[in-house]
Image (cartoon, rainbow, N blue to C red; front, side):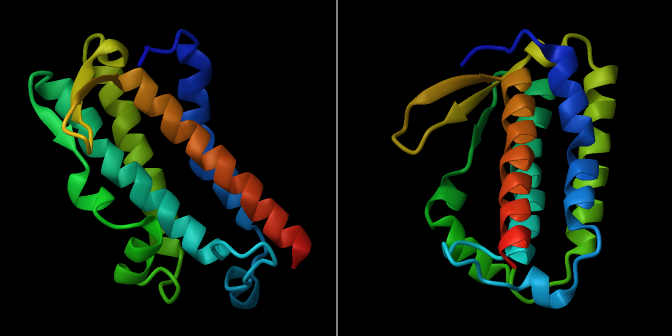
Length: 165
């Protein structure tokens, strides 16, 4: 995996992620949050919790990279189950979204502060232990780009669901 070169754009998108999500949720009510789309998949409520959890999972990898590039980071405990299973385990369908939206905002602000405070943070790497046992060197910049795109992808889906509703 390569460190992205368009750092300024990616960091701006990472920072805007929670605002983009909040804008997509403006005026939403409980019925719309729980609407099951015709294409199936997740409800908007489930998507919001998934976004907060995804950032939280990868935040640890970033922090490892910024503190101990020799350490390994893995999500084997998480990849042992499908994401839909975690949604059930963590009761996505019943939880209010406000805490997850606030958590995403706070988590992103925390990571942005670290990126500004740690020398060469963008280029630091974490040794990611893949499910097959292999090791992949993952740059912090790549994780930031991945999480930025993750929100954009799911906000697009939220907007599609809202149009369908």
